[in-house]
Length: 497
Length: 80
Image (cartoon, rainbow over all chains, first blue to last red; front, side):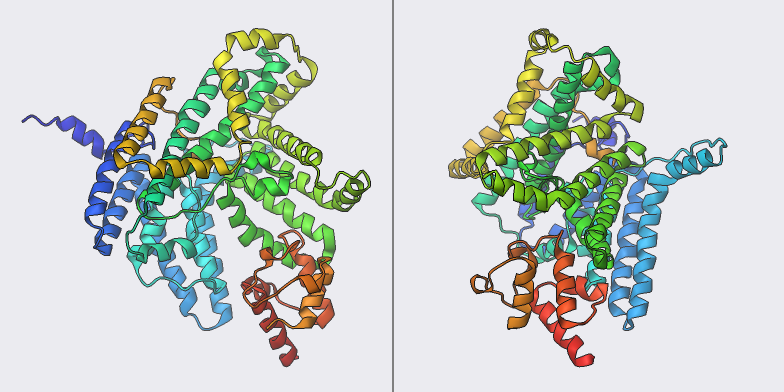
C-alpha cells in the first residue's frame, strides 16, 4: 500500500491559509471519526475529556499554529488565578488577585489587538511618525479571553466555585466548537456538563443536524454568495455605484453579517450538541427586535450578556445616584467597549457609540413615547409593532455601514451616494443583471421574519425520520450547498475579531 | 419569605399592583415585569431610600435573586 506522506503531513501541519473551517470537507470527515470514537468512549468520562481536549488543540493548532501554546498558558494561569481567589480569606486579597488576573488577561489581549492602534494614536497626537509593529492576532483570542475572565469574575462574585479538575477547565477553554468565534459560553453553564454522562436523545440529534444544515445554508448559500457577487464590490469602491446599489449593498451586508455569524454559531451549537454539550444561544431572530435594547438581547447574545453582567451592571450601580445620566454613562461606556472588542479602529468605535447613542435617546424619550402611543391609541397594535421593527432594523443597518466600510471616508462615500446619487431607475437593470443576488437578499431577509415555531416544527419532522433518512438529508443538504458554492469557502467574518 | 415592605417598595417603583405579584426567595429580577437591566438601578435606589441604607456595588452584584436581596437588607439593618 502506498501512503501519500505529503497528505498526512499537510493534515498535521499548520498553514495560515488553510484552517480547518466548519463546512470544509476535511472538517466534516474528521468530525465524523471524532464522533465515532467519542461514542465508543461513552462510558469513560476521562477518555472523552482527553479525546475532546486533544482534538480541540489540534483544531486550534490548524487555525493558528504555535499560538496554541499561548492558549494552553491562558488555561493554566487562569485555573490557578481562580483557585487563588477562592482560597484567599481576606476580601482585599481577593480583590487584588482579581485585578491582577484582569490585567493579565486584558494585557495579553490588548498587546495583540490594540498596540498598533494606541501607538499610532500617541504618534498622531505628538505629530510624529510611527512604524507599525508586525503583530499577528491569534485567532479566537477575544473569545477565549472572555471565557476565562467570566470564570475568574464569577468566582470572585461567589457565583461559582472553582473546579478542582484542571482537565475540565482546560476543556472549557479549548472546546473546539466555540473556540474560534464563540458563543462565549459561561463556565457556570459549561463545567457541570463535562461531569454529565454522554446521553443524547433523538431530539438532540435532530436539533444538532438541523442547526448544522441551517448554518451551512446561511453561510455558504447566502452570506458567501451575496458578499462575493455584490456586497464586497460595492464597498470596495462605492463611488462607482449608484445610490440604489449602495443601499441594496448596505441591506445585503446586514443580511450577510447575520448569516455569516449566526450560521457559524448554528454550526458550533449543532456540533456541540452532537457531542452532548448545550452551548449558549447566540442569536434569537435579531431583526424582529422592536427597539435597540431588544436588538441587543437578540444579537450576539453571548457577548452582549457578558458585557451586561461584567461591565454595564457594575458601572450602572456605581453611577446609580445620577438617575438617567448615570444609566446613559454606563450605556455609552459599555457600547464603546463593544465596538472596541471587535477591533482597534475608529469605525468600530463609531459603530458602538452609535448604538450607545440610539439607546440613550430611547431611554430619554421613553416616557413621552409611551404617553404619545396611548394618546394615539397605538399601544400594542400591530401597526406600532411593525413600525418599531422597521425603524429598529434601519437604525441597525445604518450602523453596519461603519462596521463594514474599510475607512470612515468610505462609509461616508456610501452614504453620500445613497443620499445624493440615488438613481432609482437603475433598480430594473440591477434586477436583471443580479437576479440571484436580489432574490437571495429579499428571501433571506424575509426568512428572518418567519414564525419562531417553524424551527421547532422542522426539528420535529427530522426527529421522526429514520436514521438512514436523516443521514441522507444531511448528505443532500451538503451536496446542494457544494453545488451552489460560488468559490472557495470564505473565512468567517468573526474570525478576525 | 419576602417582607411586605420590600414587596411594596419594588412594586411602587415598577408601577405594579402588589396584590397581583407573587415574590419568592428564588424569584429573579428578570421574572418581575418591568424589572429589566435598564431600570435595575432605579429599583435599588428606591430600596436604599426606603430602608435608609447604602449597599456596596459588590453586595448588589452578588445577589442572585430577591431572597438574597432580602437577606442583605436584614443583615444591613442588624449591623447599623
